[in-house]
Length: 65
Image 1 (cartoon, rainbow, N blue to C red):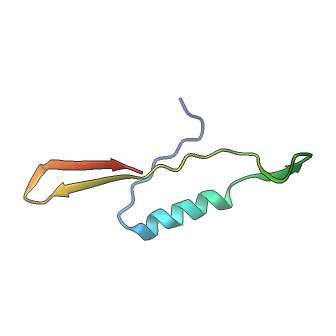
Image 2 (cartoon, one colour):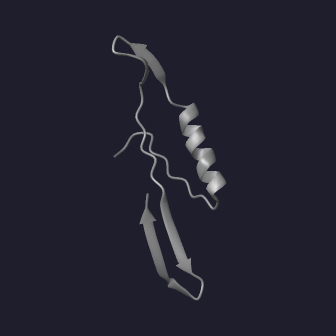
């Protein structure tokens, strides 16, 4: 189980970009002795692309970035 895990479905690259920037805006940053702008949170941004052949809906190619 991952706390605060969100999964979004996007139809366009603009939606992906908006979600990426949404995550950046919500990142918590604070300083400490070793780093002036240390990120106090961690995030994993995974993009999974699905390409479906309109002539054969059972033919799906999935790629993770």
